[in-house]
Length: 210
Image (cartoon, rainbow, N blue to C red; front, side, top):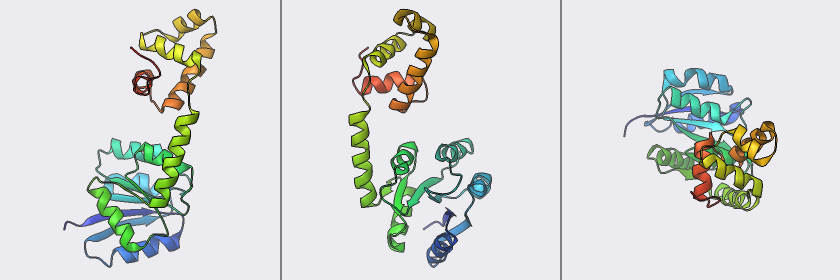
């Protein structure tokens, strides 16, 4: 088996050093770096090119989207395995949706951690069962609560027809700022980066028809 290069980032020195020792008992694992500083991760990703970053979801200063963007900018094949002390951390579903390849509890055995690393390298993903239960419940709750208002549906329909924010404001008899805020809320609800992806997601959810 090819060598598996791992970068460990965790606020607990005890955890990251212990994980390093346990992983490197196996010849196929090489821990390239361990740190408690997210800046170290961002600065060294391109240099070390790890296969997996094992990162704590509670690492101080962690902005998960920034980590994902750095991997994309560097054009790396690095996968992210998020660790957590708690299964019901509300940040976990967001990280999974944002691109984490796996998510596991820090209390898992070293054998489970190694299985998780191997799984995400193969593109299969991995989530500790208690986290999977929480994430499923969280997504169901989000789906049930994040419904569009009638005005938002109207705005989405106009966006799908290519209308500008100014045109929408004039049609609805409101200020352009009101429309801007409405669209910002829609992007957040739909987890979309722009108007086009918002419309596509709204169609997928059957909020609007073309």
